Image 1 (spheres, rainbow, N blue to C red):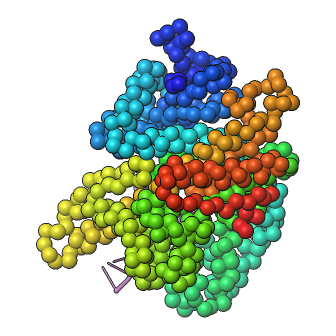
Image 2 (cartoon, rainbow, N blue to C red):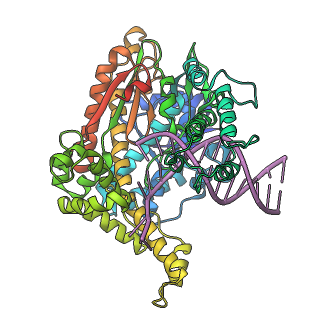
Image 3 (cartoon, rainbow, N blue to C red):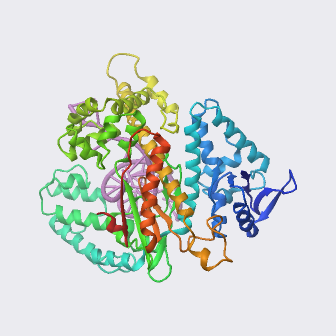
Length: 566
DNA sequence: ACCAAAAGCGCC
DNA sequence: AAAGGGCGCTTTTGGT
């Protein structure tokens, strides 16, 4: 059963039980109302303009929901997938404005929708869906995207367990004790002094790329940039302290004490919580983006600070080589599927005699997916094409479509963004004569860039779809676990329907493209591991049916995130 | 004082 | 001849 609701400044707009009217529930009452319906006899799909503007309020009121339909996210998918798109209503587009990440902040009486407007948008989406050739897959994509929106809001509300003391210990061990504001930590200052002496440049600030580059060149080093990869090939006494300086400076600026103060909220004792804003559909391929705290780049060096609460554990699961597996599934390439059957797909390439080392298998495969052709990859690609003509043919074809200015689709039907006027302007200037002109070069370069983008789009996007289904299925199964509270507190909120909070229950706390982390009471960790593994299988079947492609996981139960690295 | 671009580096 | 996809964030720098 669909229940249509919409946020307003005053509260939650809901249908009046008497019939066609509508009323606004103050936010203070909305949670109880929603929980009641969620726990009712009929399963509810909540339909609303934008999860991010409704669900956090409900979460704060202790409500967790099973299903929703996020009209904003689904409109974005459908408007590109449908032959006959319709414009998004203004109350839907405001949420996408960067200035108003939360629709609620931007709601005025003028752009806040009525329930009938919301229902009309839903009807159009349903019609567009059923009229679309790939309706079945697209329906799965919309459901997964919406489930992702619920998960994103829940993970923000729950936060990633973060041990502030441990984080400080890591920083102190690497950099020295926390310095007064504006001062370099002692380790960093010592390295800076060493670099200045070795380069005979007593006032050098190693943080300034421009002056550092000049100083390096003055000292006789033949470098064109100060990038790590270039420096590491040079033999000179300054290189080692300089690279160490850069490593530590990066740690300090990206995840130092200032980061800790800004992004980790204190909790009980040592265990704080890191909260980022997950942005489902934030990347055109369908990958999530995040905003705040650099959550997609938590460096290995700091992962030891991600620590489960006392009596709890982290179940860390990452999926191996999702992109080539997704490609095998899309292309129906049984040979590639077979290579991945026993776990490590790259090892499978070696075992099949296609390439001679795992490293080369990886380099070659990534080049096929990204469009690289340089050096070693160029030599391996022909072998991959011979061994896996269907898989490589699919990405080569996607690249060709992109080079010609076309759009491509993921397996479930997310469409790549159409080109803008800039593309046509550049392409239009070229090709008017046979000489290799600047315009010609620019046009070809642009076409190749686009080809690499569309080549990768189908693979990255389909992998993201698999991951979304994996995560949604994991969530569904975690919700179905018996609540730890139900026996001890019969008067408490029913669970899983409208569960008060994840307190005591395993819950997702992190997602990174092909990896999920579940925070769980220690005794449930084995159950959670099985759930995560089963969910990966289900996701594979949801996308590819009976096609024999596997999605093996590396699953570990650990006390802290760094221990998951084997 | 504020802003945008570029360089650089972290993650997948 | 060479040609690697997608992100977020911090710092410096040069501009207004």
